[in-house]
Amino acid sequence: MSNDLTHVLVDGRVVQITLAGGRIAAMTPAVGPARSVAIPLVVDAHVHLDKCFTAHRTRAEKPGLFGAIEAMAADKAAWTEVDLRARITRGLQDAAAHGAALVRSHVDWTEPAVPLAWSVMGEVAAEGVHLQRAALVSLEVLGDADHGPRIATKVAADGGVLGSFIYRHANYADHLGRVFRLAAEHGLTLDFHVDEGLDADAVGVDEIAQLTRQHGMAGRVLCGHACALSIREDAGRAIAMMAEAGLALTILPTTNLHLQDMAPGRSPRLRGLAPAQELRAAGVTVLFASDNVRDPFYPYGTHDPLEMLRLASLTLHLDPGDWLGAITTDAARVLGAAPAPLAVGRPADFMTIGGADWREALADPRAPRRIYRAGMAQSQGYAA
Image 1 (cartoon, rainbow, N blue to C red):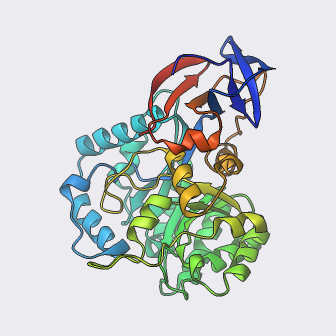
Image 2 (image 1 turned 180 degrees about the vertical axis):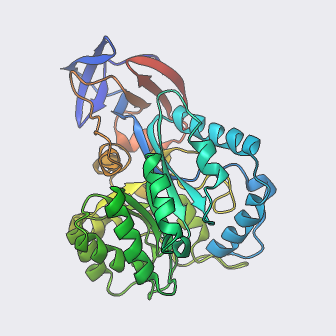
């Protein structure tokens, strides 16, 4: 695809985009069909850069989520600064190559001490990409009266996000209450892995919604996964609670499709994706993100939110043109960043994908895309 901005589809209009001084100088109506579609640079709101690119050296002995957790824990014992730096850098460069402007990476934090990956990730950078660190702390450790305050202090000092994994833990309500109090005391936002399984009695998201309301933290709490909502008979009630509390939810198509309802020798019946259409209709902001890339949780893929939009459109029956915010402006807003829509006078940070409309642009993973940062075309290639 040439550096052609004469017939670009932007928000349903075919326009010619003129760039000057690193900004969008004009968007003039163009006659004729679009040759490409354009969106702001994407946001990958939920990834695991500490785990990526380990699939070649790990093997899960058990199927599903907890088999992957065990395989990852075994590999983590051998992590070094050199190994972490190389993989994290590669992952962040991968995200940049796919047009990311903002990435939030979770960091496993299973012991009271600051994990090596947290420190290394704080030193890695990729041009044009802002990296947020989210502490994925063991709920028992984070909810501990001694350890929790020290961890929250460290996360706040480093400008990070606080979070934990919640899935049918004993006494999780008490621990979660302490976590919310820590967030309030330190001015932290929260990001949870919650109900990542197919058990109808996994109702952690309900408790999170209640605590979000109680602490007045609407717009400051993001949940990931919530797979149990796909099978809960009372999902409508839980979704209403989430909307009223001001929660947002990230759906992770690749990892959840890969791990949920996994059993050797049997095709999966239950897909484990939270009901995106019902969530958004109720007022919950829904995001899509890459999650795991080439590790025991998902041994394939790249850090590419556009591919997540494509997969979500297929598996959740969505019109991709109506859900662009889930990987751009809505995702930026939820992560505390200023949305960057394509508009005259705005910085020229966007990407174009070959195609006359969104269905054509997403029909072929090899559709050429070009990434612009500050008005400069940085790359040309294929989405896959």
